[in-house]
Length: 598
Image 1 (spheres, rainbow, N blue to C red):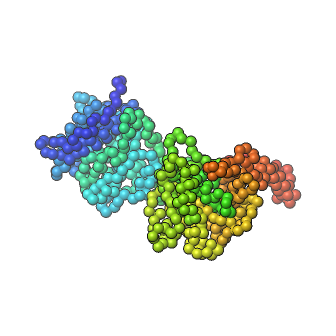
Image 2 (spheres, rainbow, N blue to C red):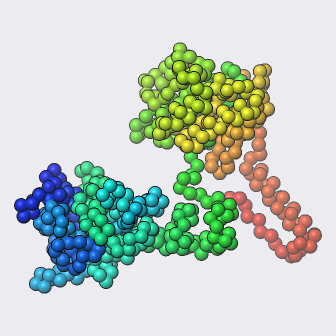
Image 3 (cartoon, rainbow, N blue to C red):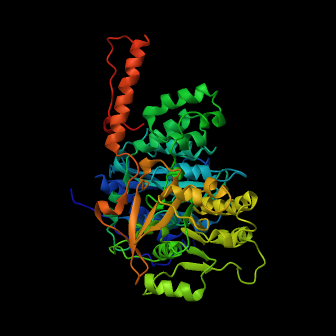
């Protein structure tokens, strides 16, 4: 069988044509692109035959002047199909006959004009919001999880009058008995959860207005849903976007199993194997969502993934404190981090390191970094910038002093009124804290107000916030944990920060580590103290290589494993002597390295 590949015809042709001398309002550019995409979806799974444009026999749910029409066309006859569409649309004037598409590929008998359904390489969905109802964000959220193309339908001035879905299948989908729909049509409709059962099985072409029993529906242009990259082979594009149709059926099964409660569906997803297990706990909580959310382990959702600006040191969406005595270089390394986060790097360009850890510059690529420099003026800031950024590449770095120009606002008000307006803020540095407090750093209420504003910013923008803070006068810590005891001001500084990084000098070395860390170690937090030497020409801290660059005051993992084993065996012997377990029983100890994650 000859290989046929659909091609996009010149899309710059006039979108309006004529039918019987009457000007029509059909977006020919959109229709041509869409039919080519659909044929590519069929051909990608080996389907060749004919689709048809048609009208129903009757007036419900689709109004038409000419009932029962059927025009067959193959992948090389797209322009012929468009000609029929133009002819019968009648300029959109009433009465009109907008042709629906039957996307199922058929084998057509040329003599009788009767088609035998072969199947479909595309999956589609139509869900309308009737009357005063509109498409809800939760409906779109559930469709997003499926990896399909989608976009809203419009009706008069309601541009959220439903949703159109298109996907490319990785296998041939069999047609239902009507010869024009698939099982997945109903699945899409159910997951979207709108009440318009008359319409879910039909395919509406973009760029054509369809008069129905409930109004005039339209989807403006196929480009609102699918735009293949310029220059890419259409068939290859479709193959790269294919999905397993079982994914849509599984989504419908889980949606129904969880009583169509969006929070449960988002929490548990579309894993059909765990439905019974999940529902057991939901039933034990009287099928109350609030009670269930407070029961058992926290489920990890898409929005709950933990991210770092600097893995092991600086989390996003939280406040970290960088604490040290004067002269340790804390302002220098804070400024250095700002420059790294505010620089655009090329695809194959090496990523920068900060305190020995790679900076996640990808999460910072689309935002403005903010540096509150409360002590250093332009002369010092510019001098450091010439050392850290001699080519001036950090174009996304914004500086603020302590007085905020001519505005008579507090630090918290400045964050609320100004910073919150920016869409993306990957990093905020406040250097030092005392310059931006509304009162004494010893006053817990003042410090709490300061942290509250920063926490709101960190969580709403998912940005890393670094607060530079001083130690007490004369403080000389000998280890990173001692930094906490020497931190200046209220205990709130320690309590409200998720991470406290400590720095201190020891001879020629600068030592840096985590004095406080409320993040689980399995997320890769840096647990040791690191030794650095400063390059006086560049002001950069260089991590001493090898074992010389690490100070450990804690037990090694092997030592901890041995202690755990000995403790386990001791508890077993106590249980046997107390008669809690049979003396002949052998308790199995599983080494940590062999345990499975929950």
